[in-house]
Length: 156
Image 1 (cartoon, rainbow, N blue to C red):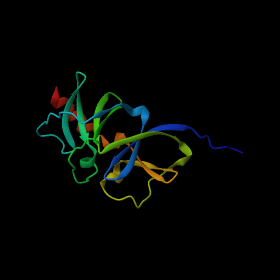
Image 2: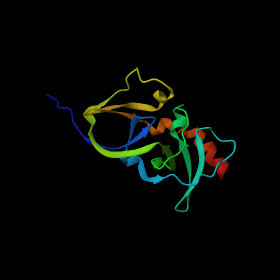
Image 3: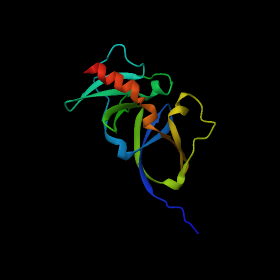
Image 4: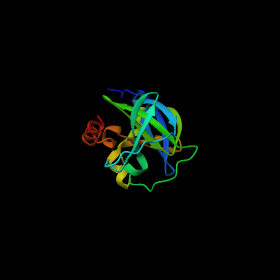
């Protein structure tokens, strides 16, 4: 008999328009409060601009805009999650960063067909956690690498 191997994964849970989303903690560098954003002309609409984070110029992506949700004023709860994908470091603007949880991978399920909206393109699955349903975000899909490469090249 083959037993399924369960492994624990740490997830950072964040909020967008009242829904809870999650990304693996190993992709996250830090969580920052909202700060001054320098706008950049002629860029993808979901790219908000750049920030100077401890001397490093970091591009910012507004996940609400990327998921085709209406924009919202930033508040005290708004956070920038700094993530690292391969050789690129980016900031993701979210409504709030809620907590970090350990989840057994056996709780991961594929995305249900009923999840609607533009965000379906950027979801790798869902996690059922007690009474919560977390939507797993696939950061590789959120950040269209070609778009970002073009953007970063135009910066240099």
